[in-house]
Image (cartoon, rainbow, N blue to C red):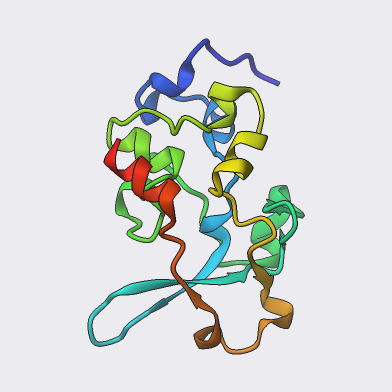
Length: 155
């Protein structure tokens, strides 16, 4: 595995190596939840319905390396795509760094542990359901705009 630079997360996204890019992900799982778009207004709402590969208890992909083989429309985020995708949460490390903001205080690169993210309520672990059992997405619209996201959006 390639060596990562000290405090690499403070660099511009375009400067990150592939391992640094992957390490920047906070692992919240929100990008793996299905979204619905209103055809008339274009408004995007989130659901608590996870991709079939997301472990709903840990918010980690069960087969990250091969995910595109099982979920062809799964997006591989890039620095350009992060700026163009409107549905990523404001707490997302990629979004925050693309906007020149610091990582959230609970981010594992700052704390050394993913426990702080869980305690802050930033993860979907234990708060989502798999698409394999969910039924109609319209029945699972949810507002993830909790205190954590509001505080981070202001930072």
